[in-house]
Length: 289
Image (cartoon, rainbow, N blue to C red; front, side, top):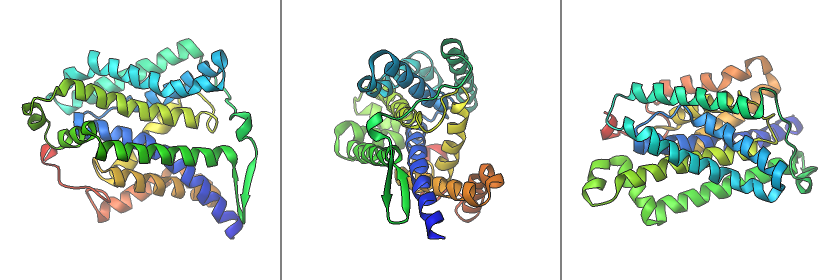
């Protein structure tokens, strides 16, 4: 039994950490900007497509640029579109970002085509690592290490840099941050770019695991919303714990009850919300209540 269970848990952790990267970016954007970014999955897909093109044009070293391009694109979108939503009805933001996600998907189909694109891992990450009963591919192990490093780096950035402190303060009281003389519009542009950068990182890492298709955005955005809901609004720790829970539950359900795998995370969310309506680590946020 352990021979089946442990590899599935390891695969679930890899999937969970990818979900965490997407969900943390979504949570940061919602926490500070108050915008439900329905286009977040589209930025995730763009990360995968940019990685594919950079690899075809320049080789593997250039792939690392893909998340930065996605982050820069996100900053341009915030400057041109999103900042006009601040202070308006949340429904308007939801409609605009939903339309943006459809636009990005249409552009992806126009540029890269509607078919799937296989994307193999780098040759040096081919093969399998065996540790006792655990069998895991080298690439999945690398994804685990890279996502953990990114999350630790993000935690250090948020807690030990001046810009990170401004982000955390602004997520609680944006008006107070503006009154302190801080250029809030520039901060908000940076936040949106940071969230999109994390989605782009997840897209690049997921590209060799998932077939790259225009619809991969939909496969990322719903788990991200579920994770943010389970973890609690704006909670960094909550997003991590919820992402790992969703990843492991999904992987185990695929192994033991594949027909229920699509519904497993929603059942998990329903059970947790019945016990903790604000999510596992949710707090009372004055600006949303």
